[in-house]
Picture 1 (cartoon, rainbow, N blue to C red):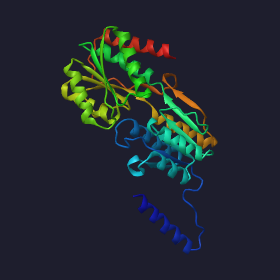
Picture 2: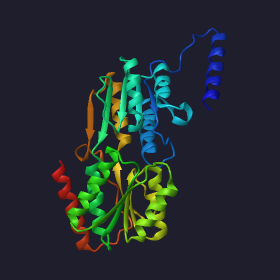
Picture 3: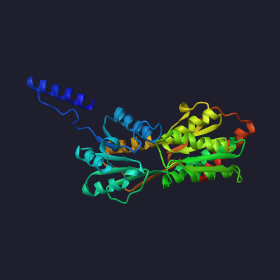
Picture 4: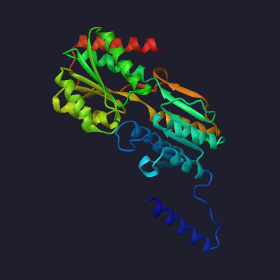
Length: 320
C-alpha cells in the first residue's frame, strides 16, 4: 500500500514537471512523527491500539505525517529506531518498555534527535519519558471489584512481572482492601502479552477458585480473560481503553489509561513550539490521564451504589 502511494505521487510530480510547473514535496513543512510499536504491534485491542488512536487523531487534526514500524518488520527495535531517525522524523516514539535499551543506544548516536519513551523512564538527555500512575486508576478498579464481588474472591492477571504492570497490581489490591481488608485476591503473571488462549486459561482457574471479578493488565492476553469471564458468567474490568465491546456481558467498567491523549498532546506541543518537555512526565488522576470508563451492566442496590461512589470520590481526593 505504501509503495503504491509512492508510485502515484511520483507519477503526479513527473506530469507536473512535464507541464513546466515547479515540483513540490507534498510533505514539505509538515511535522513528521515516527513510531516504533511495542512487541505486540497493532491489534492488541489495548495499549498499542489506543496509542495508535492518538497518533491517528494527530494526523487528522494537526496534519502531521505518521510513519510506524512493527517488530515483525524490523527484527530488532534498534533497526526500527535507526530507520525512523534516518527517514527524517521530527519526533521518534518508542511505545512500551521493551525497547528501552535499544532506544538508548540509538539516542547516543543521534544526540540532536528528539525521542519519546512511553511506559518507562530513561536518563538520556534527548529522551522524554512518559509514564502513568497506573496504581491510581487501578485503585479505583479494585474498589469496584471488591464492592460488586459476592464471593469476596477477585483476581488479577499481569502480562509480565515488571514495574509498570506491578503498579496495576499494587493499586488494584489497595483499592480492594479499602472496601474489605479480608478480601482474597488471586494473582498470576502470564509472562505473555499476546496470548488470549493463555489469558482464558488463567481466568478459568481463578473462576474455579471462586473469583467472581477479574482484572488484567496483559494486552491481548487480557482480552482472553474478558472472553472467559463472559463465557463463565462473572464480572470483568477492562484496561487501557474502554473494553466493554469485547465482552459486553462481563465488562462492568475499564481502567482507562489515556495514552492516546498523552501522545496527541505532546505532538500538538511540538507542532506549536518545535519543542517538547524534557525529562520525565508522570501522568495520573490529577491530569485526567487515568480513570474509569462508564459503568455498565451492574446490578447494585442504592446503598451499594452510594458506597461505591463515596469510596471512589474519597480515593480520588486522597490522590490529588
